[in-house]
Image 1 (cartoon, one colour):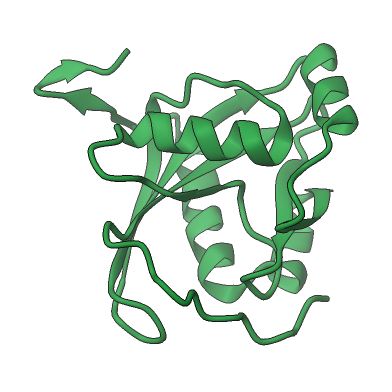
Image 2: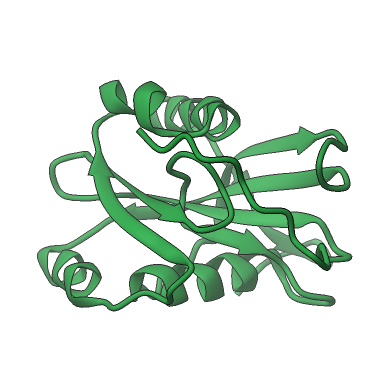
Length: 162
């Protein structure tokens, strides 16, 4: 679907922790976005800033990109990517939940920033054809964890994050 080359960040973030949100609608479709700096569709999210808690980074990016404010305190998958075009990174996929009708309406009315080029609801069978391969594999593993009912708790100094 989207096969353009990603543009490189002129100043890559120093902290390469990326936080993504896996969000489902009432029909079980997954929320995915297109961006100006990545090829293929990806989960909403982005990098954490210095001293930013993981779920706060995921929440900030998700709200900016979709208009949704979600707790994002459960981690479904982690993924390490080695240095290629950018320094190595750690990606965490947070569980955003299954949306209510009101939340779906909020996402539909939201005007994302110019860096978000598309917002789509995808069924699992569409992921391989529309997502960047790394994101597809990461998302598939997160969906599998969700199906099994497994997740990692998000802790801050050994206590469940608020």
